[in-house]
Length: 526
Image (cartoon, rainbow, N blue to C red):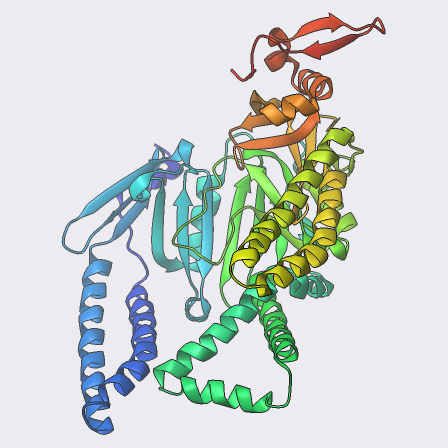
């Protein structure tokens, strides 16, 4: 037996420990949580006893909880082992009840590394090994919390290395995209900014309530706007919240995307590394990649930008990891840059997401206009009806809503229609839809496993239908909304001929040409 074989056998039989500094990190983090809770608890207890006595009780409870946590973490560390063999990756852990889980190596699809600031200072990482399957009880993942950075990189390389590499791969890493600090200008126009602004306002009110000063805060705000009309006061507060949200969005972008890099590694693996305080490393095997999704939220799209997401099998969002979406390949950047990176990721000379798309019939525009008008005029009519029986004020509210919101709804409906499109670009079928969140999906035609044809009563009257391409990757299904009946069926038959063609019948038209119809079935998936 060779030396290499001896080493492999030893690795198959020897159980390894986590890094001993795991105990320190977890105790420090738990202590931070306790410290954050100690202040409001101390002030709450001070209502019935002296302030010093209240905080003495809090300090004693803090010390006891910290000691108990240190003891529990020490026992957990001593009872945790892991090993990676030729066939399986195994983890054995448990505080009172020992649990042993294992994953077959051929099923492993991702090895992701994360490290918060304290872990980075100590040179430690959390390793998350996953199969990409969504099962209960965490049976599809193993988490090693924590190991050294070198050990994490070794595990990632070992578990993702395949015997057959992608043809044409260079022997060295190839950078597909790297951070451009100018991309940060798109952060304040994302949907995150208003959400953060509202969260900041809510946090101010919550903290003031803890200290019993919420009434004083409200009075102080009222004094600042004493000589200002209520509408202008509302506008001013909204502007302040928007500015706070924009600043928060800038900070969040820096934390999430600093040190960003997208690389293609030997063996056919895409690797995304990013993060300022919390470092993250996400790996996606190219053989699991089925396409690309170009996402253009409204605010970002108005500035000519888009982000790139992967459409791949096995990318299941980790419920325990709130800070990251595993499918993000590129933040919001100029549309031309997004198209270029998408082409590089897909190994295509031209980006499929930039291909010209077929327009949808005017009936699709009419449907969107009708829905938009009903969405505005319906509630306005209800308010007007209530105003006739309750108070005339509601009549003015209904009229104001109708006058202000109707043009906005019409603009959104027309924009939604202009955003509709579908087509074929080489090995990919492309579909685009949406207005508040416009998405252009380039999906491998070989990755489509079925078609679903849906036609509601109103769609039948309008002569349109919705095609849904079913796939095992990404969202699992991608819609082509309100395509013409013959147009949509012909496209499905052209894009993936083996699936829908057996269910279609050519029917001659008066112009002596054939058009596709499907009278026998509503679903062509199989």
